[in-house]
Each structure stands twice: as C-alpha cells, then as structure tokens.
Image 1 (cartoon, helix red, strand yellow):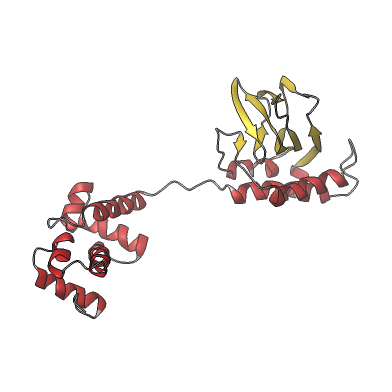
Image 2 (cartoon, helix red, strand yellow; image 1 turned 30 degrees about the vertical axis):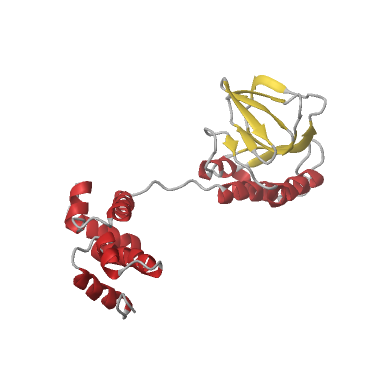
Length: 258
C-alpha cells in the first residue's frame, strides 16, 4: 500500500476574512493546517486561546474542540489544507511547534505560499482528484517545508550536557589557578574518564587540551591589548610566568613577548 492509499487530501482553499468570517466552536474529524497570509486572528483549541499573525500557521487535529475568528482591527486572510491519513499526519510529529502542539512559527510567504496557491489552482471545488496524485504531492511538499524549517530538536545526551557544563566552568573560571581537570570533575560529580569521553565525543580533543587552548586564546587577546606577560599569566591562572611562557610557546611557536 503506497502513501497515497494510506493518506487522502480532503480539501484546500483560501479565505479572506474581512467580512469577519469565523468558525466554531466545533469538532473536526481531519487534520487541517492554516497558513496566515496577512492580518491576524485568534485560534481557540480546547479552551486555550492563541493569537496568530501573518506568516504563522495553526493546526487543527481530529476530534479536538476548536474555534477561530479574525482580529476585528486587522482581519486575517489565510489558506488551508485539509487531510487525513498517517502518512500526512506523521509530518506534524516532526515539527517543533512554537506554542503547544498547534501553532507553527513564522515562515516567509515566498517559502510556502506558492505551493498553497498551486494546490488551490489545480483543485476544483469539492473534487480534488481531477489531477491524479498531483494535489497529494503538493500537500506533502507543504508539510515537508514545515518539518524542515522547524524540525524537532533531539534531546541532549548526558555527555552533551556534561560537555557544555564543563565548557561553561572553564570559560567562567579560567583565571583561577586552582582550575584543572579534577576541579571540573568535582564540580560536575563525574569521573575523569567520563569527562574525557564527553570531550572526545563532542570536540575531538581532551578536556586538558581544551582547557589549555582556551587559556591561551584569552592570553593572546590580553597580550594584543598591551598587557604585560606577567599580568597576562596571572590573569589566565598561571602563578609562574616562566611556565606560562613555556606553554604559550608550545601552543603558538613563539614567545609571549614576540
């Protein structure tokens, strides 16, 4: 069974609501996606009210009580597609909604409106099958744009969280002489092996190398602003300027004075 047999485009259209056209409250049995071309209005879904403006979209889901109406001072015009079937609906599960699971954030008209317009132009009223699979293909393209522009963000792994936390500690405390790998591990309550794995997986270098590189970058900035070698060393957590110079030369191939 192909995706068109599983899914069906029920309808599409465009509505100028300068006459204050509104809908609901009522229940629908299909999925409907509205894209706001201009103006603004209000969408009520299961008792919760959302203000929707031009460029945004709202989604109606089956058997959910909804209502919507235009802003009296700036009535909206929208275009819409109405569909049923898992192969269409699954695209909605890939979208990062900006408000609950029913409001999609701004999309510029040139990115999506031509597809809505094309779909409306080839579909006769109440008879969308005159052009075989073309309407379904365009509808799938519309849903694909939504899912590609606003993909759901994968949850961060523990390693990623530890890596970002360790980087934050380094960046805020690099000037402290006591800062080292053990210090970071104690702050995060993790082992050296775990910290090492997090850094290797996230940036390809060890935490010690990242730490030294970060200190050297800050040192280079200070030196370029005319700060003395001794003051730069102390500002970057080195109590011994000679050792600082040795690390700097190893990193950049020249002395701090050079």
